[in-house]
Length: 194
Image (cartoon, rainbow, N blue to C red; front, side, top):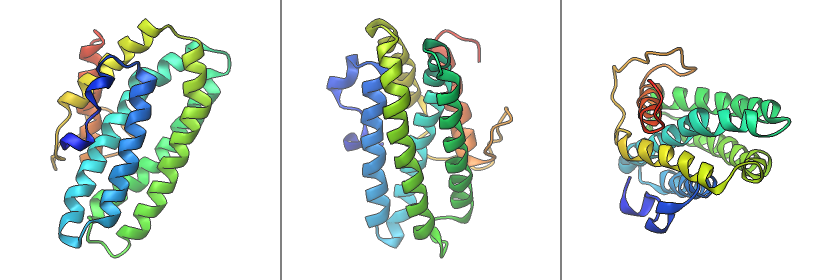
C-alpha cells in the first residue's frame, strides 16, 4: 500500500467498524486507480486492490463475522448473506487474477467486481455494522481493530504465485494465499492458535 492508501494515523485508536469503513473508502479509491491506470500500470494497481481486498475480507471473516453471529439476534442470517456475497466476488476475483490485467475482458470484469464489492460494503454497513456497533462495547471494537491492523501491517505487498492454501478456501492460488497469511496474522494478534 502506498502512504495514501493506508489507514490514517487518526484511525490508530479507531474501533473495528470505523477501520473497516475507512477501508471501504480505500477500496473504492483503488478501484478508481485500476480503472484509470494505463495498460502498463494496471497490473500493479490491481495487485494493490487484490491485497487490500484480501486483508479486508479475511479480517471480516475471522474477526467481525464470528462476533456478529453471536452479538445480536439474526446475526447468523446477516453473516450468511455477507458470506454469500463475498463468495461470488472471490470467484470473480480469482478468475481475473488468473487471466491477468491484460485479458480482453478485464475492464468489464472489473466493473462487475466493483459493483458487487460496493453493494456488499453497503450491506455490511447497513445490516451488520450498525447492529454490531449497538451490541458491542468500544473496548471490544478496539480489540477487534487491533487484529485488523495487525493483518494489514503483516500482509504481503505482492501476490506470491505457487503458494498453496493450507485450508479449503473458496479460492485457490494467489488471492487465497494472501488470505491464508492474513488469517494467520489475525489469529496471532487476537491470541488464537493458527
